[in-house]
Picture 1 (cartoon, rainbow, N blue to C red):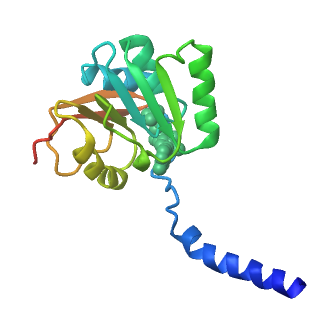
Picture 2 (cartoon, rainbow, N blue to C red; picture 1 turned 90 degrees about the vertical axis):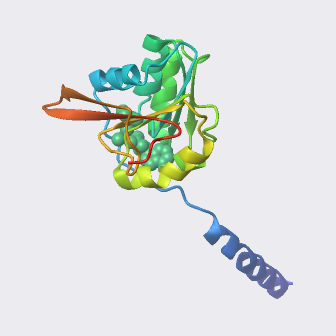
Length: 184
Ligand SMILES: C[S@@+](CC[C@H](N)C(=O)[O-])C[C@H]1O[C@@H](n2cnc3c(N)ncnc32)[C@H](O)[C@@H]1O
C-alpha cells in the first residue's frame, strides 16, 4: 500500500511539474522609484485628461498617479502593481481618501491586464520594459488614447508632446503619444 502511494505521488508530481514550469512568472519590469508629485501632475495635465476618462498606471507603486488623476482631474483610475506590499499601501490610501468608487488597484502583472478600457496609460518603467509593452498597447488601445511615459521613450513612436519638469535636483522628461502613434 505504501509503495502504491509513493508511486502515485511520484506520478502526480511528474505529471504536474511541466505545467508548473511553463506557467509564466510575472517579471519585475522596473524598481519602485516614485514620480515626484509635481511630475505626476504634469504627466496628467500633458495627457489632457477629461473628467470621467479612465487612467491606467502600469506599475502604480503607492498609487499616487491614479489617486491624483481621481482627485485633481476627476478621472477614474486603475493601478496595476506587482508588489503585494505596494498594492496594499495604494489600496489603503485610496480607501482613506474615499476614492474606492473611482480608483481600483489590481495586484498583478501589468503585461497581463486588459488595456481596452483605458483612455490614458501612464508609465514610469524602463526603455526595455516599454518595448515589451508596446505591442500590447498597439493591439489594445482605442484610437485617440494617450500614453504618457516618464523619462523613458517608446522607441519608434513619435511623441505628440514632450515636456520637462525640474524636481529632485534633476530634469524629468515627459513623453506623450497618441494612438495610433505616428512612427519616427
Ligand atoms: C518606477 S516605479 C513607478 C511607480 C509609479 N507609477 C510612479 O510613477 O510613481 C515602477 C513600479 O512598477 C512596478 N512593477 C514592476 N514590474 C511590474 C509588473 N510586471 N507588473 C506590475 N507592476 C510592476 C514596480 O513594483 C514599481 O512599483
